Amino acid sequence: MTPYLPRKAMIIMAHPDDPEFFCGGMVALWTAQGAEVAYLVLTNGNKGSDDPAMTPERLAQTRRREQRAAADMLGVQHVTFFDENDGELMPTLRLRQQVVREIRRFQPDAVVAPDPTRYFFANTYINHPDHRAAGEVALGALFPATGNPMYHPELLSQGLAPHTVPHIFLANPTEANVWVDISDVFEKKLQAILCHRSQIKDPDALAQRLRERTRAVDQYGRQVYREGYRHMTIG
Ligand SMILES: [Zn+2]
Image 1 (tube, rainbow, N blue to C red):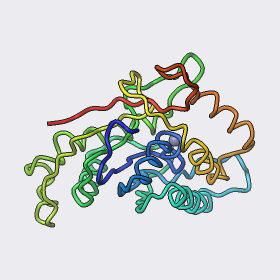
Image 2 (image 1 turned 30 degrees about the horizontal axis):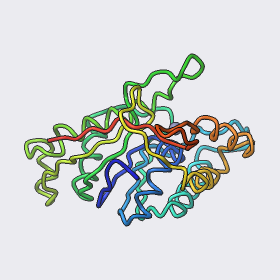
Image 3 (image 1 turned 135 degrees about the vertical axis):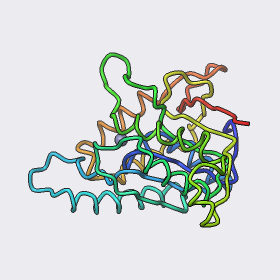
């Protein structure tokens, strides 16, 4: 069960592999129930390697391929890459206009994005600044720009009419208000994450970490895997 089953959902994330890590479970549940899902990946991930023989160009190509494979595995129909440089994502007006364009074009009734207020995880991990920037640019596009004809009038003249997205899910939020039981699709989420081979040194250790991080006891006392979101309903 998901808190809301969209007809069309857009997942706006910073890096190739973020969609799977942040919301792969809910995406798998949505596509299994017939939702049409589009990924919007804002950077090309071209700094995600410490291999001295790797070049940024080759890495970006590899990560594009890995992202498409992961999307296929989760039943995601559309993947769009914006090709911003990894580690340099900023919530600029230029980027916001591009995100508004994609939202108006696809007309989703749900958007998933990172929580831009999330700076830390426990006392051990600093959230990647690109994740915060992706959340910031997504929220800035969602309100008020996508729904207001006065914003980005050049889009209006291209036939892209204002569109308000009623459901927003902030992934990995500072404060979750919904928990989605992803037990049925946990293995699928894991397999989709493992498509990002260039990012994974030790698949077994990653699987172990993901199990530990995702495992919880639900309100009936059952062991489940779950993803937390801040679910907002707009308008
Ligand atoms: Zn990331």
